[in-house]
Image (cartoon, rainbow, N blue to C red; front, top):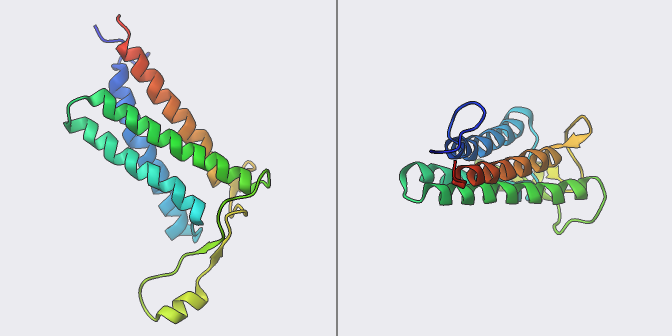
Length: 163
């Protein structure tokens, strides 16, 4: 018998859905902030997105490939890695330590290239463009992604235990 979560769902099924929905929602929020509210990503913001893209692919793979729990665990690892990068980035924003990169810009790829470069916004990695309750977007990514990664692994651990 499979171990079930308090809601009655098998733990690995819940882990699988978390592995798919958490990066999808966080990436959706990042793109909404970027294109809807003009909060252009810095280089370290992009670093946080890459593991979420990988997590999405791994989570989708878990629906069709054998070794479902393996792919879910890898997706959980990718989500956790994004959170760890977010924690590092938040530390740079709060001035706890120095970052590894220079500032970056978001240059559109259409129209006059020189005009686009000259009018591109400068995005600094060490300045939080927005925060909620004193926590930057990178800080929220750290909290949500690390918690989700650990939660996915815990759910997989529960489903692997004999009932």
